[in-house]
Amino acid sequence: MKPLSIIAYFDGRLGHEKQTHGILQALAEITATNVVHKKVPVSRSAYCKNWAAYLLSSSHSLQGENFTSPVDLIIGTGTHTHTPMLLEKDLRQKISGKKVRVVTCMSPDASLRSKFDLCCIPVHDEPPSRENVFVTLGPPNPVVFEERHIPDRGLILVGGLDKKSHRWNSRTVAGQVQTIINNNLSMQWTVSSSPRTPEDTCRELEDMAVSNPQLTFYRSENTPAGWVEDQYALHNTVWVTADSISMVYEALSGGCSVGILPVEWLHQGNKFQKSLNILLEKKMVVDFAAWQADGQMVTQKTELLNESKRCAEEIIRRWWPNRLIK
Image (cartoon, rainbow, N blue to C red; front, top):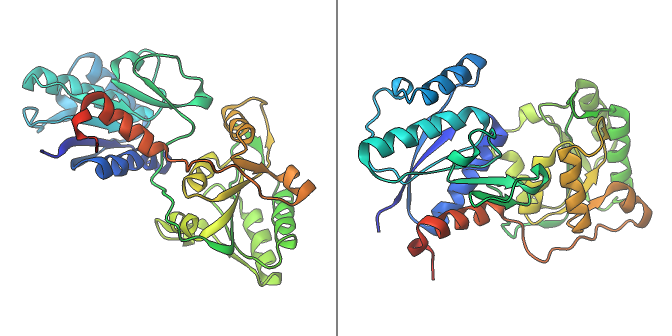
């Protein structure tokens, strides 16, 4: 059987690229694949240019392409990837006469939604019930459970500023971290900032690491690519600030017991909060206040979370079921 021919579009945004890489990784575990990567620029002018090219069915932005070469699937995540993917699909089908499927890992613009063969959309986005919509619990990602957890190791992932969603209080976050350490004196803790973490929060955590021998603090800019994924594999217990929703799902995918450090939301009922409420209702994560009350990190792990695998299996089931392992 020939490898599945795939073109993957990337917009340079880490969260978006992780979603696409997660599904590509899961597809490769099901069937042989041959993947070509394409980068799209992220700017207002590029966005408008791509829309114009799509509306005019212009191949100008895809000059030099061999549209007669066989392609089975086009996949990508992020608004800036949508029209380039759809344009490539249309041009390839017109020239080669071969059906090409196009998949996105998020909710596209309403005017484009019907153009995609499949949209993998998290439930917190409240996706419509349609044939081309596949609802996920959270965004797919490349993290998988590796059975390497060290019981007495804990990880704390600290987010940061986002003026649109929440207020950030460095002293409060530092206090939450100290509380966790004080209640788990036998554990070794690794704490990491994110690119959004303000400088005063980093300084608070650095000072805390000096006075707490069981705590090691890392600034995100000093960690190599893939570092946090390695930490999920090693740490059984992971605490994540509520604003870092993608890391919550990555930690769950890594088979970790996950606790949520609260932030002060600007708007109640935002999609981050909705997503966390779903996880709390399912008892998949532990709320910081509830943990303080009983000191228990008890979650329900009836099945490992693997949204990338679910998306990949749905893609294969729909169009290439003969590739599924019987």
